[in-house]
Length: 76
Image (tube, rainbow, N blue to C red):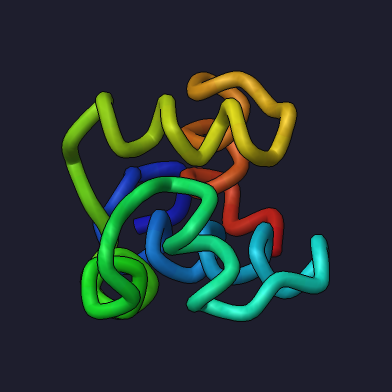
């Protein structure tokens, strides 16, 4: 249903943020101080954890609400 937030929508938007910024998964993992496997999980399965969304928000200079809103609208 359009407008309903799903983890797959978040996953697609997180990947789009990374690709748009021109970062590899490894570069993003280094910025977030995590393992590349975790980045792959976020980009495949998404996340509901606000702490992770806040980390992405800080790296990509967007608000957490902006990530969630854009994901819900399919703005990718």
